[in-house]
Image (cartoon, rainbow, N blue to C red; front, side, top):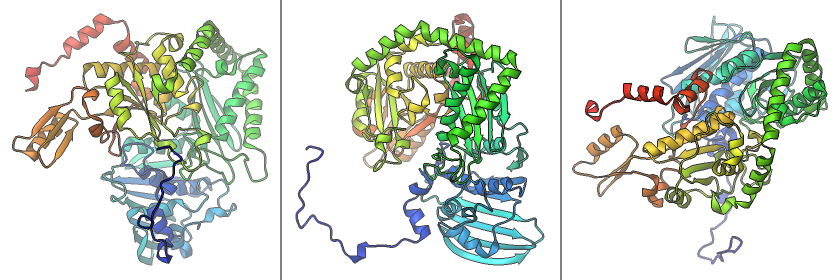
Length: 628
C-alpha cells in the first residue's frame, strides 16, 4: 500500500462523534493526561533527562530565583529512600493568600511581573504545578512573618489547607513523591542530582546547597565548573571574565573537538541555543582578529573547553524543559543576544590576550598545531567525504529512521520525538538484521559494522577519514564539525554478550574518547543490554540479564523450565528482539569524568604495553573453579 493511499471507511467502521466526545480537562487533569507537554519524557530515573529530575529542577528553580533576588542564601534538599524529596529555601515565601493557586492553577505565578522576578528561569507559570499534578503526595508550606500556611495534595487534588503560628524563618518548603503509576519503578540517582546541584552553585556563587546533609558550594563560579569537568589538562590557566549579565570561562586542551557548558539564568541549557552559538562565533572571530592571521575557525576552536552563562530578561526556551535558549534579545526590545555576547567577548578577550602575551603564545601554538594537522589530511578528508556520499549510506551501512535530532525539517507533528532518536551500532549482518526488523522506524536507526573496528588509540584524526568504517560512521552521525549537527540523541553500541562483543565495545568507546570525547561527556553514548538467558515454561517466558536473574527465574518457573543461552544478537529472533529495544530497553550510559584518568586508562588497556597488561591479567585471573 502506498503511503498516501486512503482506506475507505464504511458506516460500520466510522466512530460516532457526539457532544459526549467534547471534554474539558482541569489544569491538573491536563498535566496528568499529557505529561510529556510539561516535563518531556517520564522514565524511571535511570537517565539524567528522566522526568523525576525535571520535577526536582522545577522546584529548585523557584528557590534559585529567590537567591537571585537576594532573598535566602541556603537551600536544603533531602531525598528519602530515593523516592521522596523535600526542598526548603529561606527566601521570601510564596504569598500566602495565593498559595493554593500558585501550586495548582496553570498560568499563575509571580514571575509574570518583571519587578518581582527580573531574570528568572520559570516564567510560564507551569513548573511546580506539574510537580503537584504528577505526584502521589505533594505538600507546600509558606513561612512568612510568624505564620505558616500548609497545603497538601494528592495527584493535584487539594486534601488539606491550614494556617498556623510558627517561629521558623521565612521561606518555602515543598515535599513531593512522584506518582509511581506514571513513573514506573522509578528511583532517584544521587549522581544525577549532585551534577544538577553543582551546576546551580557554579552559577550562583555564595549559595549553599545542603544535600542530604552534605554542603555543596562554589567560590569561583565557572572556573570551578571547568576544573571539575575537564578530562584533559588545560594548556594554559582558565581565562575567566565576568560582566553584568554574562560570565565566560575557557581554555584549550590537547583533545580533539569542542566542549561547551552553557547556562541561562542559572538553567543548564544542555542543547545550547542562541547564547552558545553567539559565543562560538565571536570567540573564534575575536581570536582570529587578535592574531591578524588567516585562521580557520575550526582550528581556533579545536580543543576548546568553555562555559558561558547569561542572564536574560523573560527568556524564551524551545520547550518546557528549558534545555535550549530560543531568545534573540537580552530583554524585550533590547539588544540582541548575539550582539551582547559578541561585544563582551570582543572587548574582554581581546584585552586579556593583549595583557597576557604568555597565554596568547600558548594559544597560538595550539591553533597552529591544529592547522598543521588539518592541512596534512586535507586531501584525505576531501576523498573521504566523497566516499561517504558515494557509499549510499541508506542502503549499505545505515538503515536510517524518520526523525532526527536538531533537524528543523522534522519539526511540527513529530516534535518531541527527536529526543527519542537513536542509532544502534552493531556488528554483522545477522545482528543488524534482527534489530532492523524489530526497531521503531520512526526513531531508531541501525549502523552495521564490518568486523572489529580498528584500535584508534594513539592515532591522529587522519585515521577517521582513512578508515572506511570510521569515516562512514562519522558521516552517519554528522559530527565531523561538532555535536551541533548530531542526528541522534542516543548512540547505542549493540554487540554480543561475549568476549568478542566486549572487545568491539571497547574499540568503539576508544574511538569516541579519542576523537569525539564530548559525545560521551554530554551523555549520548550507551551500551545496549541484551538478555543472556531465556527461561520459560508453557505459561510464562522470562528473559534474564544476569546469572542471578537466571537462578531466580528457574526457581519461579520450576519444575524443569526450558533454558536457552543466547550466544549472539543474531540468534535472537526479530519477534523477541522487539522486547529488548522497545519501551523496556535496558541501556547503560557511558560516562566520562575527570577522575576517570582517561589518558592513563587508554594507555594501559589500549596501548602497546603488552607485557604490563599481560601481567595484570595473570595477577587478576579468576579460575572457574574459584567461582563455584
